[in-house]
Amino acid sequence: MSRIGVDIVFIVLTYRNTEDLKDFINSTATLNLNFTYKIVVVNSYYDERSKEKFEKISLEGNCDFINVENKGYGYGNNQGIEFAKKIYDFQFLIISNPDIEIKKLNFSEILGNENKIIAPSIRTLNNKQQNPHQFYNIEFLDYLKYVSFKKENKILLYFALFVNKVIREFLLCSIQIFKRKKIKIFAPHGSFMIFGHKALSNLGNIFDEEIFLYCEEDHLARLAKNKKIEILLSPELKIIHREDGSVGLENKNPMNYIKKSYITFYEKWKK
Image (tube, rainbow, N blue to C red; front, top):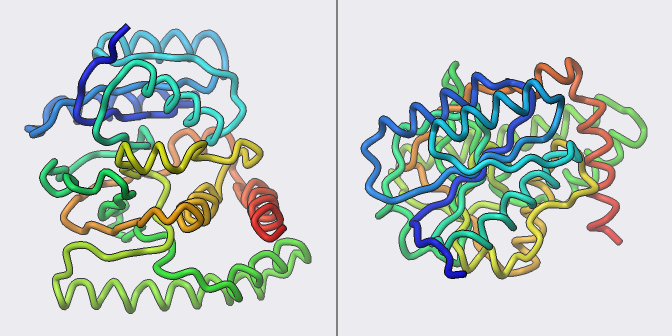
């Protein structure tokens, strides 16, 4: 059976909160996009009621729908990627949260980057810039975060986060001043990531399924570096992130997930 040709496939992982998905599909449909696309909705199963709602919204929005066990962010997205590879012949694949609104996504801005990962400008509703997750890989800061989680030392954690924030803010200012269009970075923000089809093939299994939630950017950055896949920040692509729809429903204190995920990530990559 031949695959269906399409410019971009979106993988949208959902859990419990149906309103975010409805908004994502509707807002995307109203944009004057200069490319063909297909949305694959991957539902991390919570209960029958939410599953049926997600499936109904997906079918009404002309999206593909698959239901998977709730084994976390990595597992759900990996399942969606494998489904897309079997059904579609695409140039780019986008991993997107459902609580996303696309403001500007010009296909000409990403063409020619089939063996790269593209990170757009992602702003929250209060205008906080979320990309990049990290401009550079500073091993000492990674080590400090690891020790802080292992020893439950908040001072070390806050210090590492503060240093990373200072570096980010300084470099973000330089991008605005010099109007740079594409900048090589170490790690993108995980809410909206664009993968060229060659990069996707070269990376293999994108997400570590032992990491249930959070720190997926850290793993992806290490994987991309290991496979010599560049990650580029492209400020011309603009995304709004409404933040934490499904996660907020599930877990009021995400630090428990972050701690476990970061320790798992760090120990695996430092073996």
